[in-house]
Image (cartoon, rainbow, N blue to C red; front, side, top):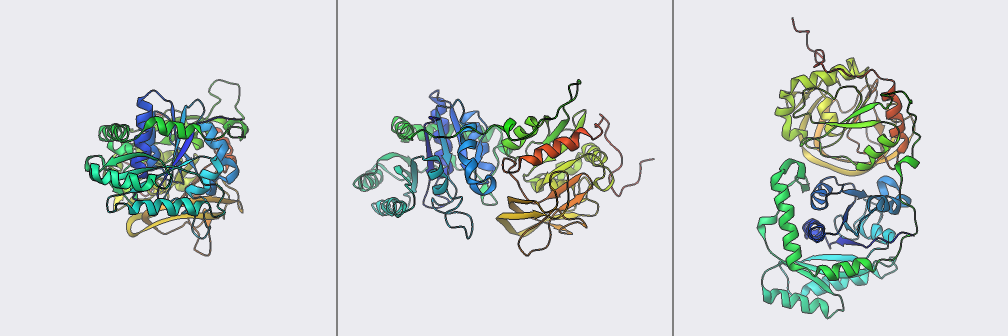
Length: 479
């Protein structure tokens, strides 16, 4: 049994202020000396970056679609180890799940799996007593055979005045639902958004740190933190073992010095998307994971034998990425002609970086003549995919669950050897020797064998040197 005080921060719909409240609550509790474990329902990478700033711990995602229902509680316990409080930020509205899957992967679904009380954040900016009708509806709906979604309290957001607060608070408390706090309208703590999400914390640096601190002050001043903590402590024990990456993979590391293959993982402001568990699985499988920043570093880390380039917003930094020609050359040299070199695994932003051009600016050219451009339409969806070719991580015919989140398109949309197929659409992605790149984001806790294969391939690859590499694909050798 594991006793972890916990609660889920949810809302009737997107835009009500879940991230404001959840991040502020994390920061406020951390400021009181509580070790806070931050979690996010769904595949989103951006909110966990703010959670990490608030708590000093990695933000963790809980997604039944990406990893399976059975792994939600073990992954939660893994992330919450040593914490005095776990705060789980929901996704969209409380009962909004995967498309055509009912409530599967919704905030309510995860709250049930965690047996955690729900704090409902209600936007009161354009209502008075009517907020009670919203609360009543959500409390009643949760009791209609939907598995004990326990509404433990309400936080009123965007309150305009003392009188407005009294009106809303009295109406909700008449229902017997405690109001745990009321936050005033304060435009100064709004975080700018992009593509249906916040701008990643790593891109805002000092500004993001200041915003998180202000959110903590706002929540501490407007919420009863003792009552919130008491609600979290009311959650019952969980009967499960924590997820352990070393128990998911086989480590095959030579005893000789330098036996752990070094895998370089892209980071920095342009590549902020990634699940912490992916890195932990690589390490458990025997790799030494090191970071590099394609905006700043002119070389791959010395001794690199494998490269992982996750998601982000490289289109916002296309000029700077292009200007770092030494690293582009080094990566092209490492991947080899048409990807026939060291193993490279790339998702979404990584795909764009490996293309020949992004919005007309030269990139690494690993994928030959592939070009990428910003498009008019946002693609945002869960995907059930099948590998259509062997790659550095997958084998033909293997089925995976992932998600897409991008506003770019590539030309061509897939290579002569594609990576994935889903639904009845055309194949997607590129497999070229040891390089695999696609728009599909994967949480490797659901596919731990991918980490084993990446480490195995890296162990057999030649190590990168400190040089800047040879010519980029399609370019002549310099005289």
